[in-house]
Figure 1: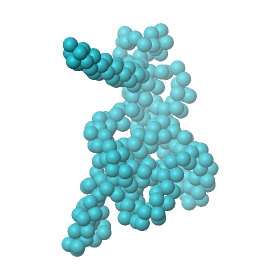
Figure 2 (figure 1 turned 45 degrees about the vertical axis):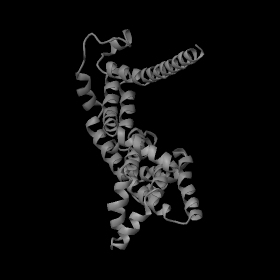
Figure 3 (figure 1 turned 90 degrees about the vertical axis):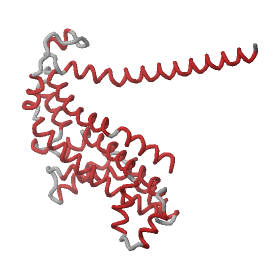
Figure 4 (figure 1 turned 180 degrees about the vertical axis):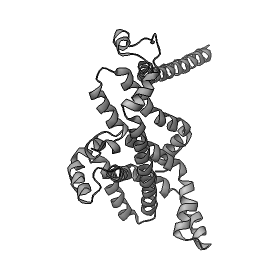
Length: 285
């Protein structure tokens, strides 16, 4: 009788634990998906309907909000700029971070730890503290007001996170495999591209996603450095659009949907690699 009571209590505890976890996941999903759903629905509303019924479905779905946002909010210009800047900055910073991480993993422990700490300390430097020196340097070298004025600081600011995530993964790579390739006559460059990079692929994807998301949504740096309309990115374009059409909320939300969609699609396509990359960095570090 006592054993049956204990089993019943154990089963009840497991059921309550599972129910609690499910409830937490449901609440978290609603908390995340609720604003996204509100944003998508609001993007199809007219201004009067948005204020009359902000949380309900629109009576008339105004698809033309997206075509107007594409032209009036200059998404046809800011979207390609954002894609170019984010793609190049993510690619360059990820490759450099991989090289640095691999080099640090093969250095002496004391020297490697000091350099590793120095790189990771870059995460503590706020962009507001370096924007004035950055402004002066970019203007002195003639890059101010160009897309390179955004790519250069993005690459520099993406390195600390890349080094933080990739160094433990690089340190866990099998040294015997690398030594065997070196004995077979492979150069260091061939070892890096043909052995190290493929083995670190999950971590590379994780770093690319993490850096890509904040570069895509970064507002302050383009606001200061991309003063020309032809080099502005979507966050700056959307904000300026709000200032010009402060009551056209349907156009504002449609612009935000367009800017959010590429990031969501990229994350959904690479979710598994992103999770495995973070797990590898956490476990093997």
